[in-house]
Length: 111
Image 1 (cartoon, rainbow, N blue to C red):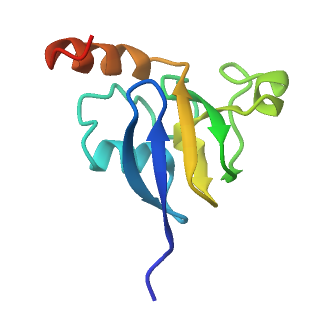
Image 2: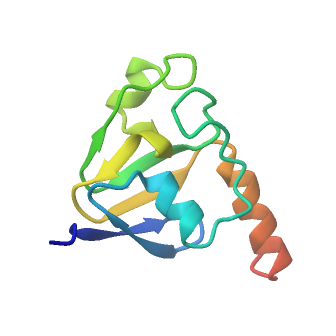
Image 3: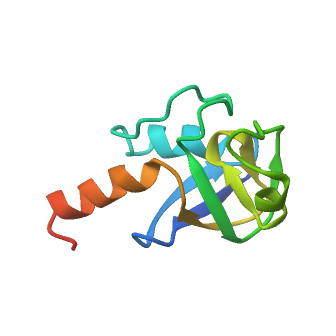
């Protein structure tokens, strides 16, 4: 039995990718095309993959308070390496991934 997959859309670029319910969002991002992402530790300790979940539901693992405060987490600001989707998600970039997205947009003439 395969895991259920959801669509994750990055608001900043309107790009989408699929992510299984058992897969962390950052892993799906890297696997499905964001190979240039400086994703650091993949364990919640570096804060590079900080995003805001604008729409959708997710399960979140413990995040370092050095990178995501309790107030931010209540406002749905999380680390992409620490969340798994329970529904389709729409994300806005907050952390270092934003620099990579901006470079990709410039490289391909999108800005």
